[in-house]
Amino acid sequence: MAETRWHMLSTKDNPYNPHTEFDDWWAWDTRAGYNSLALLARVVKTSNDLPEALQDQAVEDAIDEIVRENVSGMHIKVPNPED
Image 1 (cartoon, helix red, strand yellow):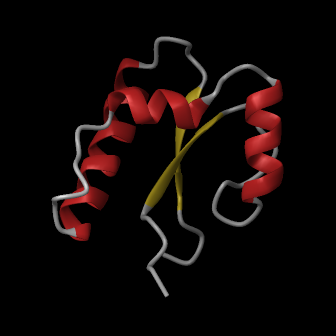
Image 2: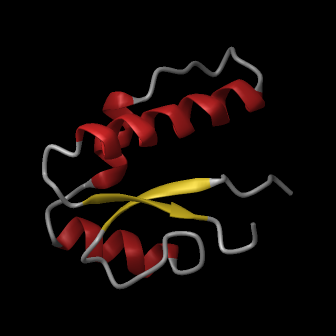
């Protein structure tokens, strides 16, 4: 079983936790028009040729960049509740 990522991208108005309520979180995010996963996919710089640890770090770095730039003013970094 793959490990859960350290953090996930969300918005401050989404009532669902993407770690524990992913389907509800994703449906809400999409209906609200944020499309956070698509945004993350556009920002992340990774490759399937990289080891999994480096891919995970690339996702973490992309989340940090999105939250730092926060063009919409809505994006937040959600920690894994198991950490």
